[in-house]
Image (cartoon, rainbow over all chains, first blue to last red; front, side):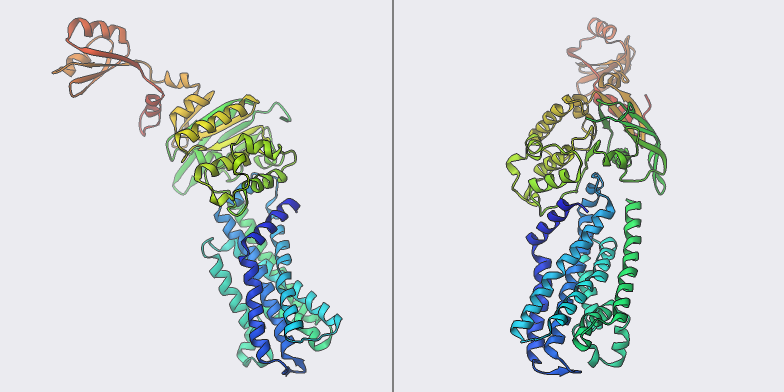
Length: 243
Length: 301
């Protein structure tokens, strides 16, 4: 990975602001509404505010992670990929930079949402739980980073925002980030278990219930990351071979 | 300048690209030696861009081989020996001019100093502007800076002056001249005859995916030998004129006649002695005639 390339990408992100603002503001506002409404209530022994906070953090980091990969579609439309092929930067290095950026961009939504939770909604957790929740949520960006790369190579430049927007809304809803899986109708819960968002949610929330990460959920989440990563690799190879 | 061997800058052999029924490039052979400035000239659809894409490894040939300095395009690019100005796109609108040129520089092993290249390409005063805010002509100069910044031995330019006004075209070629003086090898595609004539040592004329002529501008012009006599002769009988010595063909245009001649001196003597023709002009046929003769579908010289 080329550091100058990475820093140029970061500069562009900060300059465009759109992805950053969207991925931070949307979950922050939703948290204030839903978390604030049910503040003080509990669900299976866990505060609703804390539960909502973790879900909204994931919602934000997920959209940020997908947005990074999705930018590949826009850059393909600009002919930037052709331009890069006139440089020694390998196509693999380019995609790795995008994945790295996904992980980087997943951080601000988590930080902001946790601050709102701790300060605005009085969420109190043991330090180890904060750390595990944060780590689980951050690693949860991995499958969505890979999904973003798939979208980046499949979607048309002018429709990539709609495609990824719709997809992550569906994933968030069916994955239980908006409505807790515990209160979902049976059918919806069955569907939820087939989404990566559900398993990422299980990973991130498990410390709230058990004080530790659910290893089963971590395994399924990583399987999703690997699976989507392989699909991304196939799309990426097909794209660079066709040229 | 690092040339690893005596291999030619470009060697294309049997290069072929098909799009369905259409053969865009048809077993093309082309060798360019180090230091040559070559124009790839041809009408739209002749296969120039397709050839350049394959030459740069951006597109895979259906048959044939490409070697740049004796290695594959990807390897030559990795070594920084080749860079190109593509016909369109390739810019990130949200970076500044300096940032995008510096970015391309940072991806190469031995880049030229960015300020020097910005200056050379005439974008130094635009360095802090966002690429997306620039005019088409200014963006073209940014692309040019991006092509030069790696310090390539071979620069490939795909229709570099399309969309530029006359002044910008002249400035562009003045800069290019400076670069070729440094011994750089240049291959540029164009459909402007005057550019090929003025700036290339060698013109490769393409039609329907094939090379139809290859040589200096003078050699190409000589393909259509002879001169044209233009004269005013009201009521001329074209058949009589066509029968004059040295005349190949005669055309009438109102009161004017055009005589295409193989021996214009003999024609001129006969014309002056036997007719009332006046306002006589004799012109050599130019590159344009050669271009038309060689590239118009079905024409054979």
